[in-house]
Image (cartoon, helix red, strand yellow):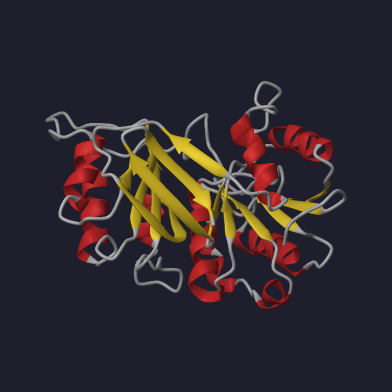
Amino acid sequence: MNLKKGSVIGITCPSGYVAAERVSYAIKVLNDWGFEVKKGKTIGSEHHYFSGTDAERMADLQLMLDDPAIDAILMGRGGYGMSRIIDGLDFTKFQQKPKWVSGFSDITVIHNHIQANFGIPTLHSPMCGHFKPETEHEDYLLSLKRALTGEAQQYIAPPSGFNRHGVAKGILTGGNLSLLVHLTASASEVDTNGKILFIEDLGEHLYHIDRMLMHLKRAGKLKGLRALVVGGFTDLQDTERPFGQTIEEIIWDKVSEYDYPVCFNFPCGHQDVNYTLALGLEHSLTVNAEGSVLAVG
């Protein structure tokens, strides 16, 4: 699955609409990295909120899953739409020749579907909108290149008063919190038992976060973890009558009774600094007074 110079990356938009010009700089940078790019028909295409009808988006992604000449797939953007097409996709040829599937946000759906059904690793990564002249040399964006080529990676997060110290090892799973809850009891449901769970989210009310975490807890998804890694929870909202807890307090309350390590402030999610994570691969996590270190392997 690891890419080399001349490898081909397909770009498709299986969810929300993305303008073609938003993708163009990503293509330039990928070319500069030494990769070829194959553009999908859904780039710049639109159907109301989406980048094409369900049938069009599904066909575009299916072509890239099936095409043996494509070595990795980068999603144009997230938003919403993947769950409308996931059950119509055929992963037979993808299983025969696995390739990196990269993206985040709504792409959490396909990440977890692939993990649940095929056990093939995927990349929770920046998408085309992160590629800009002012960001192309940023380490977080270069982490996508390192992940695509199979280079070993190690991530450092600052200390937090809410961290629970410890050491853990396990397969990394997870993604966007609201999507993880959305996938419960579906064919794409996340399996957290014995795993390191990563969560992040954007634009939710605090009580929504509380409700979603309560759902995961009641479903047994927080009990058997090896560790919890908390990424960005950005642009959160409160109600007119305040909820009464910070995001850290909300999360801590749900896992305080357990004994596994917990890492807050991990640099990944709906934020400017969004490092690439290899979901489905074994990671080690160390959390201590100096902060947290997450490493592949």
